[in-house]
Image (cartoon, rainbow, N blue to C red; front, side, top):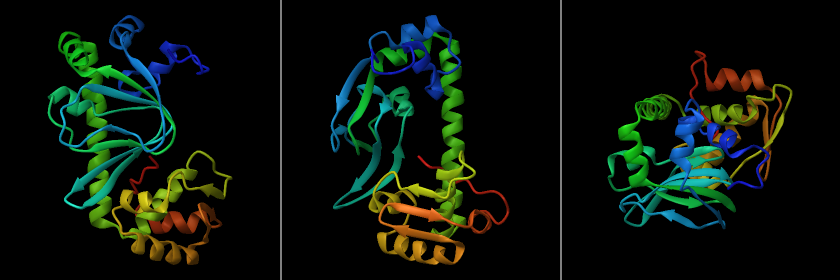
Length: 236
């Protein structure tokens, strides 16, 4: 199915957080009818308010989860590989609360929702894996709500930039993975507030040139983002 991937299919599916602890036989049963598609950028995957037909896995590329009310819309999350999404919606068989759209050419795997539900209902190991994954997601969402309520836009931006550097201690330059409009929405800010936040970070050693950001003083940025050592910002 994933002939362009360096891993075997089993290794690939085990890299999906919700499926990581499943044995090979159960995993094979779950993904046996998965459909893999190459999807161009700016392609809708599902629409807010419609019922779920598939559980999605992002194998390559980038997907935005957005919400619309009237003429207004906002980006709720930006997904990067490897991640499955809309598991809670599939389990509940309730309408999507968000819409999904590719931001880049992407490889998307789809598993039929009704079949996923049947297997989860009959396999305790898969039900437990789903429960652990959704619990992790719940904690992440609570952390982000706390950040929105207790941190300024500048602090949230600082935490986000640090999350892009977390695995590379010596790195000082990063490229924003998506446009500033999506970043502003992801941080719960308007584009104007985001611009002011970038300006405020100059005194903490942050400079920008288009999508490129240089962090010259990581310690200063860390102190701003998490004065108590409890920042919960995430890069995805």
